[in-house]
Image 1: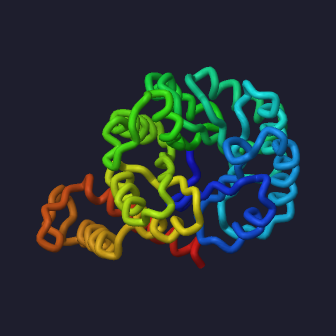
Image 2: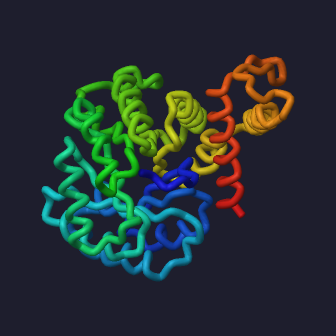
Length: 292
């Protein structure tokens, strides 16, 4: 199960870039994804692993959540990446290319064998057609493994699907919605995929809004300039927080005891809305806490 904390902005930082690892200490991202996979050339894999291990050990990242993205276990670097991450002090390890429940079992067991603390989480990339077809079985492993978070790998899905990455992400709607549904059914966090066009902030904001409306908790990012917009869009709006507090107050009023439906600020409100109101207020409180 996923620890409750803000994950609005999950910024990939290349493990081979010492300046980037240092700059990350100053960025307002909720999560730093310290990458050993796509952003690191084969000849730099080992040195990047050492650099990430040293950076996590040295600290200085404040309340930011640190996640090490390893190489696949099918590569020559994957097992050593996982062993390093398990002992690094990072909050989680992010594994690519999972396709089914057995991958989760294997990764979680390897984490335990490597000495990962019980609270260390397993995040996995959802980036293959088999992962989408098996998403329910993958999510169901959360109750007995380290699994806590799904991260969409939309670029890899586009390649595997042979699909075009259009502005509305039409080709990926089923994959996105199934992933969110499985995450919600089994208590996982769901993080949306990256937006590639750094020079198109309007397009980025639109895709963030789409991801938020689909139910994602946050978005993976490829550039620091995307952090502020992601933080704003994936946070409850001031209006939503105000309405949520009003809903909570209305149901707490002794005069409304035993009532299942109330009118709050002109809106018909049921007990199911009370649960959502509590989640919104708790999320807003956490964001303020982590920003403080």
